[in-house]
Amino acid sequence: MPREWVIDEYNGYEGLRLQDCDAVKPGRDEVRLHIEAFALNWGDMNLMNDQYSFSFESFPARIGMEAAGVVEAISSNVKGINIGERYCTLPYFYYNKGASADTLIIDHQYVTKAPEGMSAVDASSVWMQFMTAYYPVVEMSKAKPGVNILVTAATGTAGNAALQIGRAAGATMIATTRSAGSVDYLKESGANHVYVDDGSDLAAYLKEVTNDVGVHGVFDPIGADFPSRYSPALARDAKLMLYGSLTEKLPDIPHIDMWQNNAWLHMYSLFNYVEDPAAKKRGTDYVYAGLSDGTLKPLIDKIYPMEQYIEAWRYLEKPRETHGKVVIDTGA
Image (tube, rainbow, N blue to C red; front, side, top):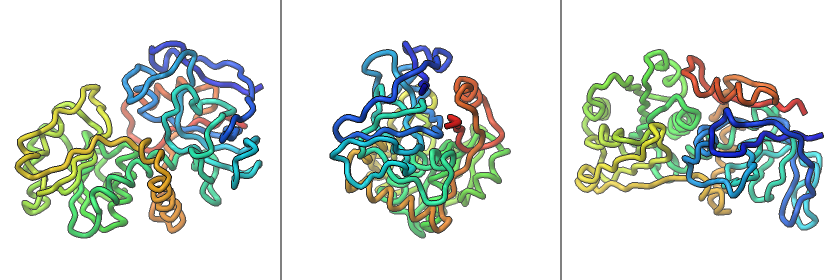
């Protein structure tokens, strides 16, 4: 019988429990996936504590927005998707219909064909990180030679994806990290410069490595007062894209520096781009092409079996010396 991980209240991942579930018949515009693997994301952790951009509609509720599996049933009006093919979920406002299960009902607009020749584990790790980074780096920052882009908390999977994408476009990529041990990893990923955060003057560092030009784009999930640390180094017409609050405190907006540099503030959420068919196609086309030509390379850190989902969360939360996605193999 299929299984699912559910949560009964906002009490974090320690409150997750594994239970049996039914393989439900797809409704209008829906498909049913037999899930082979699903990935962990920080947004799911925040959601389990009711600290995300949406909340559960009711309990018990499933977690998870990123999975790969085989199509095993489709609605009669869904076209172009065939039973037996491997598909991936795209990040979406999933509410109670999370992917942490052996079976998943999902609207057909939130799935995409698994990349050719890629295992289910690898395919489950692709779309959140690369789609999250694509729009801020390529479409908003206009990454190209002569454009300087700051990626904060760059050892995260979205940060790593941003470095890969920016490097491919020829932009100057600047990463921040709290660990000196991550410098080589970030440079291999695409960083031209790496700032190890020891509390020193970040803005001065940015001005130095950009020859006083400043940064044209910032891809930042940290929150709190971190934007104020780099805002004196914003270039004219810079784009400041905030997509999280790892500090668990909403970001303080550096109004004065932004006014002085005519900077743009974008409170960024990938889900809204997935909701837009044209934007979704631009993003998926870019990722497929990048995977095909080797420009983009997903990285798996650790794989856990279905029964060890809570252990996987514990691992994700603790400080790590290795990098990449943490993925659950359902064994299906």
